[in-house]
Image (cartoon, rainbow, N blue to C red; front, side):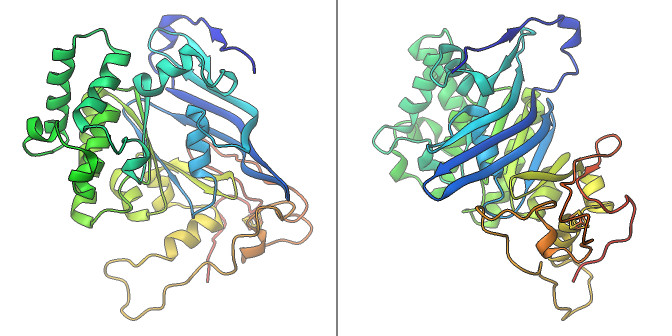
Length: 350
Ligand code: SF4
């Protein structure tokens, strides 16, 4: 493994830089049956005080892409190519893709600068340690404060994430809390060090709609308060519409379309994005209309189609082009699409 690379930069250039710049990221899994290209050439930027939603069906590589940022991809997966540049507050740029997984610099970025929350809170909460102790340990690891100060901050944070009687809950074990409360406790732990970037992997999928809305509101509030960048991974278009400023649509390990939330909902260009949008019910739509499903199935990861990976399900497939040439992400401004159809072509699905 290569050491962390520090590239000093002019501080004046840092103000409008993205927090994280991902370039040509490839994370592959080396199995007995072959190589699974879970993330295959992803380019993405995450900006301060903006929420980037990563949208895609299960298995499209969105979680592996997010875990690659923190270098917590389980074996037999590993990053084989590309860079993940983290632009630190002091002006340094650090390539997380080549950092040693247990180096002090990467350990200090994890939790301190970049925090992650998961669908299942027990992925980050230890089952046999009290909630308060888990939060104070994180604080004491990253900040030069006393135990008493850590306790005070932890209780304040539990209150901030909407946990009633926070001083009492500080002494509770995770199993003594409901699912929604555990989720809030995990968010409190993730945010206690005021990270610059929060990666949230389907953080509300397992929750009822009321708790889901409260947690999404809470993340949005804290994003504004802390000027935090948020990368939110979801398969739920309703969540995207509610919280996203920027959107990246993934299919078979690749980003097939990016843009602002307005671009994606008002002017979707990729046939896959359009199919996703057409497959959800809309208020005011004709009653009893059958919702079109995306035809076919996602191909087996060990049998990636040549050319465009979506071609086996696309109604606009062009023989000789879509099966021969891999489309690359192109476009102007934030709106980019990886498709051989000329831009602005009327696309329908189903
Ligand atoms: Fe469909 Fe071809 Fe565009 Fe792929 S490149 S989405 S197959 S039109």
